[in-house]
Structures are given as C-alpha cells and as structure tokens.
Image (cartoon, rainbow, N blue to C red; front, side, top):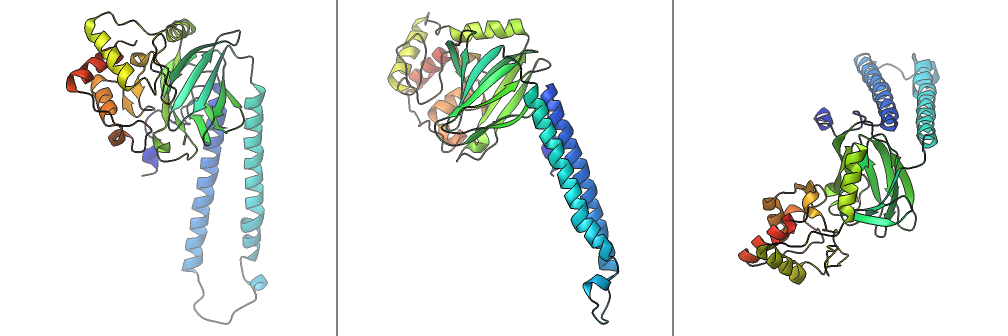
Length: 319
Ligand code: CUA
C-alpha cells in the first residue's frame, strides 16, 4: 500500500533538476539503509523470540549472552548511522546552496488559504504579471522564488525539481529551481496549514526559454476585451457577482481576496490544481465550490442559468 504512493511521476525519485538529483540520492540512501536496519532488527527479534529461555534463574544483564551485540547494535551502530545521515544531508544542503547562481527570472510566491499567488518581475525588478497555481519556468535557466505568507506557515515543494522551503509570515525565504528538461510537474504545500492543506497544489510548466518568454508576455498583458454581445453580458455578470474578490486587469474588477483571473483560460487547473480547467468543472466550481473543496474561501454563487452560460463564455475568453 505504501509503495503504491510512489506511483505516477510527481515524486522526488524522478528528479528533473540536478539539485533534485542530489535530494533523490539522499532519499535512496536513507531508504536502503533504513530498510536494511529494519530487516536486521526484525531478524534479531525473530531469533530472540525463538530462543527465549523457558524458566530458569535470572542472570544479571551483563552476564547474558549477546550483551556485546546489544551495546554494538543498540548504541554504537545507531550513533554511526545517524551521524552519517546527518553529515550526508548537511553536505547535500550545502552543495545545493552553493550552486545558487544569479537568477534569470524572479517570482514571488504568496501562500494563500489555500492556493498560490504567483507574481513575476522583469529584469529591472518591476512587477509585470500575476497568476495563480501555475508556475512557468524556462528550461536550463535559474529561477529564484521569494516565498511569502501573510497568514499561516505553508511549505513550497516541487518534488521533481527541488526540496521543500517554508513560507513563514513576517519573513521572506528564497528557493531556486533550474529545470533540466521541458515538462509539466506538480507541486504541493508540504506544511499543514488548515482545512484544505491537502488540496493546495500547483502546476509547474518547464518550457524552452522562447516559449516561456512568450507565455510571460501574454500573462503581463491586460485581459482581452469582450468582442461579442454574449461576452459583454458575461463581463457584466462578472462585475456584478465576482469583481469584489477577483481582479481582471484591464477591467474595473480589482478584488484581492481570490486569484487574479486576467488569463484564467490559459491555466491548466482550477482551485489550486484540484480540478482540470474545463467549462464543466468551472461551472461546478462557481456554483458550488464547497463540494469541490470544503472550507474554501470561495462562497457559493447562484447566477441564473443564462447568466452562468454568459459568465463561462466570458471566462473562457480570458486566454
Ligand atoms: Cu498551505 Cu499546507
């Protein structure tokens, strides 16, 4: 059952960066050493049970057979093994820290309840784009993430690309990623942060630098203007029912409670990588978010059916 948790590709033993490769090496070393020790302990336990003396006088502990094994196996061996693990993990941590180079891209990651706000900056440090729950990185170029939270502690973890780093209110932690090859992997919050901690996921898209630039350029633009009456009607529904919590750049909608939806239709998932971004899922999420993610801060909405269709048309046009 535990091994089944290792299925799929979103895990630390399938590294997509050289840093993650080091973490994976450490993981394998710990698994193998731990497994050997576990098997050895069970074998000794079986021997002890099968050879247990039946009755007879009690001898002092130090005169019993196997006393040296107890000292060597119970004290000396654990000290040596734990020390080796501590040294190994310290060396891996230092090596990863030493590899930090000047970032080509900088993004802020804000831990929200329970989703991820992502803000990109240009080379001069100016904030150019905001998105949510989907992070794009250029292959082969170092990306620096500044991790922030103004609520509780979260932990930013992309198992295939990097170890965990906490988001701690009141301070800014940094981590960095250099993806080796293009691909889409999943990230997750790795620190219990409340009701929907388990559904605080995100998607990481590693793509060739040109494709990344094109994506970032698109994300930095304001939303597409509605160019059909149905889309205009949908925008009106949005302004009336959604704009208090959500921003769409280029429109008066400037709510800051929920994710920026300027380019919602370009994202792969909804609700922090909980459901795919399809028209059907989006409709279900808008009308009954609590059935998808109980405790989410998004309230239920009850637009008229025609209004909902118009709203979905409009949101679907936000590419
Ligand atoms: Cu955020 Cu767990």
